[in-house]
Image 1 (cartoon, rainbow over the protein chains, first blue to last red):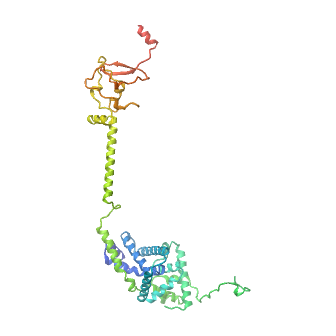
Image 2 (image 1 turned 30 degrees about the horizontal axis):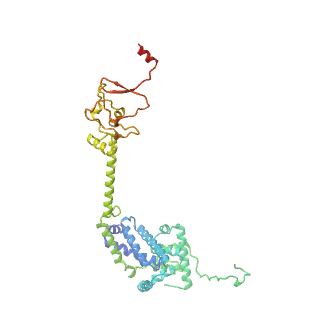
Image 3 (image 1 turned 90 degrees about the vertical axis):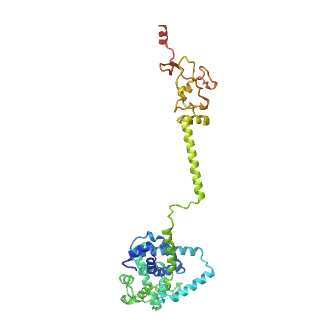
Length: 181
Length: 237
């Protein structure tokens, strides 16, 4: 979270300041990547890159506080993930080289990434999609129920229920498997 | 179906044993979801869940920050485009499209000018020389002349056709079925009493016109009245 001086940082980034943009990127990109690893696990890196391309194109037109900024970022990330899902459904077979490269990249990622985070992401990804997305947007993106509801096109009550069901299911999964992080 | 008396092999699936998870209240779940919630403060049974959520909020790893250079390159490109590229307010127009547009505009302007010229020529509204030119080229009415407008008087013998008189003035239009090019102006000091064959106008079946000399020398054309009884009486007187 950038904090109190978010307005200054976003204004500088909109004026073309690279350091300001880098600060925004460092703050938001890990959360975007974690969110995308749950909703688009096969192409999280690519979708994150496409997300930032879209963000950069629309940066000059953005106005709002940090909460609006994060809601905007994750809305774009979600749209790009949906596009990627459609693209993969249209051509589900990938060339062998590309598949091998993806496996290598994933293995390297797992080695570098915090293992606790990786396990946690896998647990959340095992939940039903709506429950997993509601939890990720609440916890990782830091959005409130209202913002998540607008993003998902559901009522705030439905989002709250989905998140609670997801947490109960997660607790059951952990108790059943005796998993501890 | 389940219940007492139902054999165990009646159903084709098995109920999964439910894990021993105590029910959580909504308030406890909301507290786990709240930002900045430490796992230590979570309810005992919810602590594993709180630890999973805390693992989602850990500081970024190295690979999660690896794409900054790519994003900065994109940012630089976009920023250069914003600052240096001239802003276009429409689609790019190649040179040949621009030339074609100019040619079309020029042709439209020429056609419009010709139309205006022709219209003004037929209306007789052009200046003298231009009206003469229009008369020769597009058979517009001849330019009006002061001599043609004045009458030669009753004794001059010049019998100008009525139709010509009616059409020679500016702004007048030829009658239907009448070609403007048929009439030509008389030569200056034209032959009195000379009827050019082209000037022949067929007699109309309408009311007859009578040439009435006026003090100003103009010829008035009032329709003749049919002779009535009163007229005969006047003649007798």
